[in-house]
Length: 312
Ligand SMILES: Nc1ncnc2c1ncn2[C@@H]1O[C@H](COP(=O)(O)OP(=O)(O)O)[C@@H](O)[C@H]1O
Ligand SMILES: [Mg+2]
Image 1 (tube, rainbow, N blue to C red):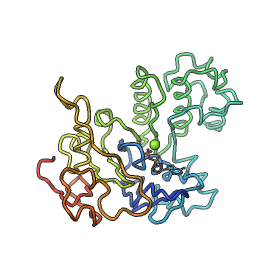
Image 2: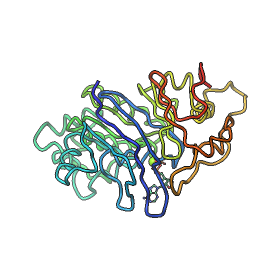
Image 3: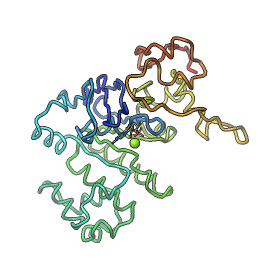
Image 4: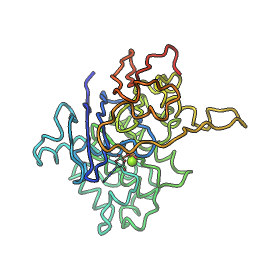
């Protein structure tokens, strides 16, 4: 299988001293749908931005690399990086308005992305907008959040990217349309063979839609593998805690398990496992030595206590 994306020991620091990624490693094959989950602050957005060489200026890469189709993103010349973004990558963010130009009619913006390769209305139809002609004539502020996000998706998918990075694309939308918008993203990507990286808080939804899941904590991918397996038999205590924290996972009336304590804000490399202070299974060495990558068939786990046979 071809690897469309390799994130290799990536370390990213912001200029306020925060270490957002602390050796994140993830390999993705063509056509996979990968859900990247973790609490707020775990580094999901930083990782997503790094895939397109889109880290904001206060960020510096201390170590590691991101390769898209084998090309080291942060070593490309500016023109090569622009081409890579235009031809191979698509991005959808939480706020659709940020992807749209407020001063330009929607149809014209879609046409600019298409550069003559395809019909604007057909692309608006593909994201299941009910009145594509009216949307094309509109300015972004005349659209609802859901419509604007569909337009942003149409633009991100217009050139059939190899990889779509969708960073919490439904977080700002009304609950009742979230599934529709995700349906649009996942069905379009399936049609075009686009690999999805879906950055999400919603572990059960990731379990339903994604082939793989990568769990982030403290700027590292602490567990990754086939979504169904990871949810059924987590190997990392943090994944296990996330699975237990899901409302559907407990019987009605049973107390909902939440994860005591707060996620860390790192200001340099973690000395040990970043989850150790909250981990019910931690032993002394967990806080003082960084867990090595344990590879168990189709599963990668960063835990001193792995493997545990049938999961935690
Ligand atoms: N522009 C920024 N400047 C300073 N710190 C940032 C910036 N963006 C993110 N961070 C910090 O980096 C860490 C990881 O953030 P982020 O990648 O946004 O995680 P997530 O998307 O999982 O919530 C957090 O501690 C966050 O506060
Ligand atoms: Mg984020």
